[in-house]
Image 1 (cartoon, rainbow, N blue to C red):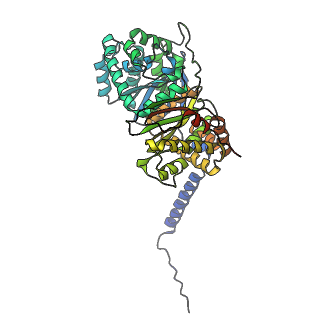
Image 2: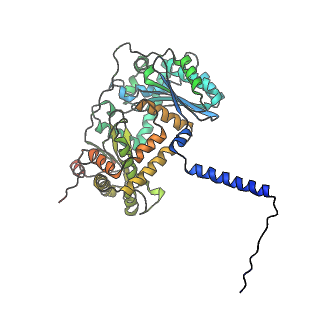
Image 3: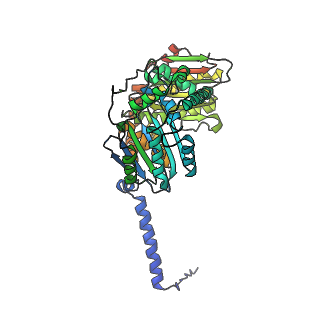
Length: 480
């Protein structure tokens, strides 16, 4: 059988064909260079975090991405941990008073100026930090910095406004009491750090809210709002030199020293113990169990973060089955153990809480707690390299997804500058995560979890929750 071969001749000019080949070659080389990008090339594509320290100790830290909008804020190393029994709640009270008028602007003027520029002004208080920040157009950065400096340095703290905010904070306390997760975590801190500064709530007790006065607020500002304890962070369309000039103009006169006694961060002792608030009229039991973790600067924090990711979180409304990455989630889904759970790794300067919070029906509480402690023991002895690698990938993804937008980036800059004294570059953080092996996770979990006294807080129909001695015995395995 004869074979006929057909030969096609291109009717295109030779120069045109050669130009097409050259273009394909350039695209191929560009694709190959993208695939083989070095670590150095990758780092060059990440915006630099620039830091400048003013003479009074205030630090200015920025990441300029060239966006038309920006977020700028003040991160202050002062929160409820720096309070005592008599003034507990003053940091949060002060945050409320910041937007109630200054010597330059009445409350109405402040609100109109923010609204007319389309900006957003907000604040929050945690146990170790107080934050005031603004989101605005990049062209309105000078106005935003002016407002931020005005509200922390020139607030009038009028008597009428103070009385009005008492009622607002008391209503906020009532709202918090309906959020059972917040209630459980407040109880968890109260029992884990009993008798110490971290054991108190951020909002403070009712009697303090009713007694806090203008002198208490001014005293807290004078004692804690100092240059070395403040970071002015900016992200988005923020030029570093411009923000430094604005900082010198508006914060240059901020004090750097202390007139009286220097406030020191007192150590907070962890105590294995429990708080149990039984209410059989409630439909679900809310339970949190935790061991003492480590502080921000401790190198064990990275393996603990990976272990926290290994436990993961789950909610019945999200579905999922036996193939979920978290073994506890797979068991919860297949065995109908709880309605939801989430692991947590809460860090402070010198200590932390590593544990799990879950919501379950009264008949599921004992079984769920058994599964939680069994999974913790497995982390101490049998966690595999494959599981750890999957958890590392998920942790890196979560960390990057949390930096989506100028506000999360600005918050990341401010928080890391206070906690670490610098902004950890993403490639460095990824390298530190990648360096962790399964043995490292097992060793760190054994160090912090195995045979340790946990802190337990529970609210609701918790009669089935084992007593503390049984929970304590679940923190180790007996092997024959």
